[in-house]
Image 1: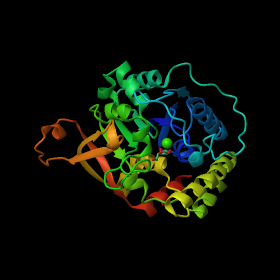
Image 2: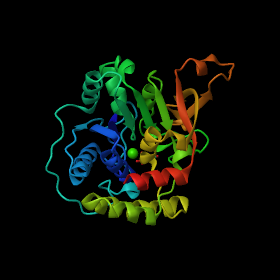
Image 3: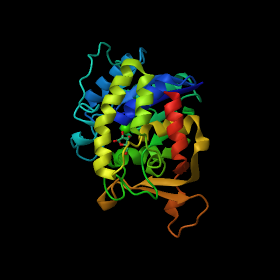
Length: 311
Ligand code: BDR
Ligand code: CA
């Protein structure tokens, strides 16, 4: 099995991905770490606790970043995921409590307890990864790999013409996480925009998920309205589930190796910049950052089938 920590800002597509992490027989979910992003940090933690409870599993939930590292905090746009992060549907009460440790401490402890084994899957702004790196820089040597949902190479952005939301929401943290030197793959909009989860797919998923299915389906309805207005499609891009799909079924993606940075300010704030391995540039800085893998494309239908089959 594949032991993971899932770092998340739930969020409708985060919720779907959490359901996958809880359900997949070959994924060992060691913990959920939460970050502000789609919602404020308390709501993110609440939703993470709720989703694992609805799945009938007791998974540690450690609360993390409440704001970006450097840029001013801005309220999450409630029209995408709803003010409660789950499409404003009515939610059952939560009985569990968050772990006493911070997300960053939880990451450091968990990675150090199982050197070389733990994969970090991060599908929100990257403040918790940046904080964990600051707490113990040597985890770079002990993390198995880092899979990030975020960024965009050729696809353009979804917050600005060039910036994807998770990068835009904390570009300074993203810069630290992307250039830390650990084995890393970025699953960005170039892959996730190829995947559209249809209303029929959602019905199939909900039917197999009990009470959790009601929340997934209810929140999906709200997210679907946003996609209809923003992209004119009938269905939702399951962004965060794509990170797990890459982890468990990488053959469904086209991946390239190279150097990756993220712009931290100006009009390009949050833009990911990719320099393919071996391509010489006059300005040598592009070859100084560590090599990582970046998804450039995905077999969207196959990824969606993987999601539906898993759930
Ligand atoms: C990413 O931004 C968030 O809104 C989603 O949950 C996903 O992680 C997509 O750009
Ligand atoms: Ca997310």
